[in-house]
Structure formats: C-alpha cells, structure tokens
Length: 246
Image (cartoon, rainbow, N blue to C red; front, side, top):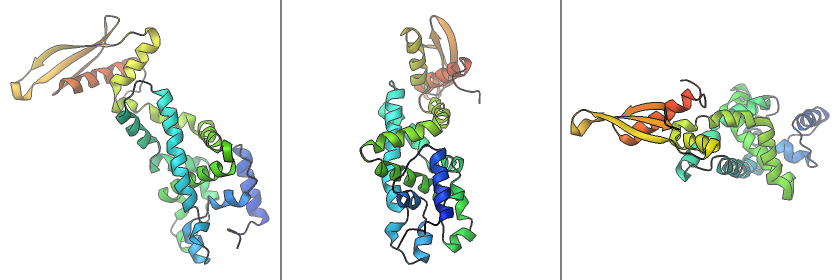
C-alpha cells in the first residue's frame, strides 16, 4: 500500500518543498514518509514502519554528527564537556521545533484524524521528530553523499540560528570563548588577577579582574575563585560586544 497516497496535489506540495530547499529526491515516497505520523499509520492499518519513526531514529544520529562536526571545528579550545552541553542545546526539541516551523512543516505533516483535531500539526514533539526524519531521509536518498547533503542542508538553512545559539556558549564556558577571541587576534591569553578577598574563611567572596594586553576588560566576583574568573570573562565578553547584554 502506498504511504499516504501520492496524488497530484501531494506531489506538487512535496516538489515545491524540494525546489525551495535545494533537494532532489528520486524516491518521492521516501521524502513523503518523513512527514507521516504514526497516528495516520494506525488509523489506516498500515505497518508501523511506514511512519517517520525509523527515519527519525536515523536522522537523530545524522543531526548529532553534523553538529558535533561543526562544534569540534568551530570551537577548538572547548573541552569535551562544554561541547556536549552546547550540542545538547542546539539539537534540543525546542530548537529543532523552530527549524521545522521555518520550513512550514505544519503544511506537510500527515496526521490521523484525532491527532489532527488535537492540533498535532503544531506540537513541538511531532514537528521536531519529523525534522529529524527528514535528515534521515536525506541521508538515505543521497547515499554516499548523504552526510554531506544533510550537513549542507542544515548549514544553508539554519546557520544563522546555529550561530545565534552558539553565542550562548558564554553560559557554559566564557573563559574558553574569551581565550579563543584573544588568541584569534594576537595569540595572547587573557590574564586573571585575584584583587581581593572578603568575608570569613568559610564564606569568602573573591574578586577577580581579567586583563588583556595589560588592560582590565572585565571584573567578576563569587564565592569560588573559579566562578569569579568565569564571571569576569563573561563581563569581558559583554564589554567587547561578543555576547549581547542580558
């Protein structure tokens, strides 16, 4: 049984989507499957494998690999933990949902009657999963070039969004971001200076300045020296306009 009967109207809609986003599926049923929700499959007595779930499983791995590739090469000074946190943010459902909305998935998703009545075409979980399924379909369709095509698709359509999320790296490790910035200018490192301590021994507050080329570019304070340094680095990033003001 064909997956969601590909009548002329559906074919036209899928082809318009392909043309708009530089895709060229020879197997149109594979592209179509990326938008078929399990509720439609169940209501029509189809095999569960006919919905997007298996493609979603594949696409999830493709998305994480593509983002790992990007972050590994873009943030060379970050440790594994920081890279993991940032990747988790970028590939979270809330962000993938926004990507799917930008691609007008609401007009493409195929739902069962009950799910449609419940507003399934606007649900974060459904659209996010369909987005991953699309990446899985792209990977399969383009065979040996599948990974490159999927990565190019992400960068061509969402690079501004990804860079916007990247700015939040300061929340994870502002010292690493500041170091990357200064090294990019003249290979010099920021210098962190403890300028004073206040309070009893068991509840001290530490005050730190961060200097670059002998100029104070940020100040921070906290109950731990490490956190005070991070706060100073974050203040420096804001003063240098690398991140936006809170």
